[in-house]
Image (cartoon, rainbow, N blue to C red; front, side, top):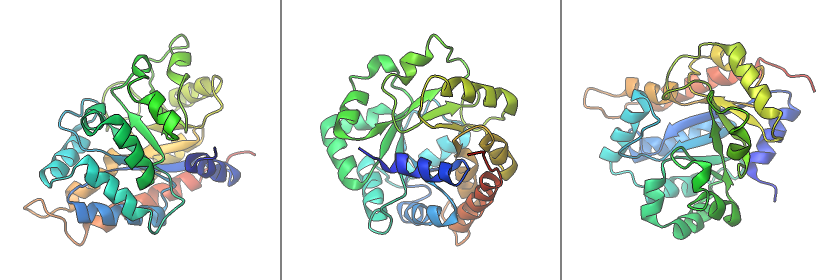
Length: 277
């Protein structure tokens, strides 16, 4: 089965460049504004969208994404409403891949079988569950793959050659390489080290490798794009949402443009790096 993710990564590779993967939190700062941001991302230059599912205990996320999740939950965002956002998006965009990123608990509460059915119907392409290691594949990964969803796995600087085959075992869509140890929103210590890690992973898999955590500027995006198949940006985008809000924490006319302007800058950075065919 040819998936939207496979088609999009292949298209970017044919253009001789990396894909720009943008993360935003569903329902941040409110449902309507988040929907407007989601609709605007492809036009601003996003190739693939990661849509964060708000959760009360986001252990892998730094302060910006934690706060985004809190804003969304305060506004009443739920997993069901997140799927509704994607369903609405698919009315106007049938091509841009959307991957849900989050934690297993909301899906477990929703019911795995019902969730997978509803996710496919809504137009979700894949899942990234940061708290489900390969040892727990039977919980969600294998049912998701059987249902036709990609299951994207995280690899980190501590994923050595002994562990890597286990991590890659049931991974599909792409491999998400976390550029640093710790939580989202940090600073990349060495682009060379990231490039070496990507090359090591690619020696073990034919899947595209996208790099995230710590990418904040067009220059960061360009540096990562030299070696990676995809560049993931999240904390910098949700921070743009926060900084655009009024004193009461509500969206303003500047909220959507604040996000899309940065996406456009990042897209230019990614597209400035041409890869050999």
